[in-house]
Image: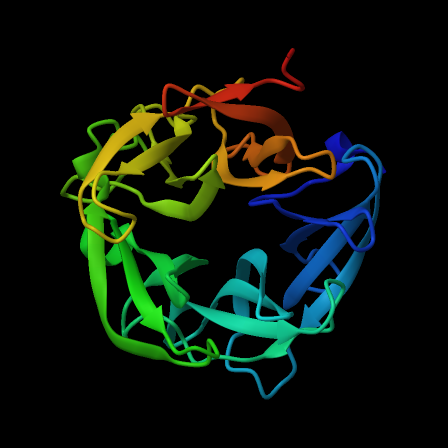
Length: 295
């Protein structure tokens, strides 16, 4: 099937030099409701699948959500960071592992966030050989959503020490309170962190509402001033080709070109589609080009 035919949120793409193929991970759809799946392509246009890579059995605590899978190669194995919840258990992120990009993945870690925290969309960040999980501390608990990190053990099985707040959504200057907010107080969303490494620069992409409109979902960039974990950031808003788009990640295609992947139609249930565009850095800022850029 072609990319535009796939209903998907939070697409995460791995370009694999070994197989010369692309692997796009997604929350699994019917009949596999409690798990994750993968689509495979040779050209980013035609895709096969979906094929299951993880299906929760009765021994796994989570029964709901199964959101935002992303797969990172780390020390020779593949680690899937996913978001899960269950009745009586707050939503949180946890890590699965496999020796293959096509799975099967098995439960690997304890929950990443502190006990009792509503958390989602964890991603892997490695600095000086030390692994960290960066995740969203949800607005449903904090009001003003928080971007946080926590150190992980070297084998990624256990969080080490305390979680540290990097910034609040409102610190960005661009995040707005969405019109659908029914709370008696303002809320600011923090979704989808992902650290992209471009031309020797680390940039944290994340998503929120950049306007009060229901379809104001957008992607911002946090440019570290004193290192990714230094606590000081210069914030900017990415100019994506279409409104109501977000939860972005960056990869290099098999030709070496930087690409950004995200979903469009965020607020149109059933109409969500993956978009893949070219990006580059210009004067230290992330610039997005619809389709392929010239030159």
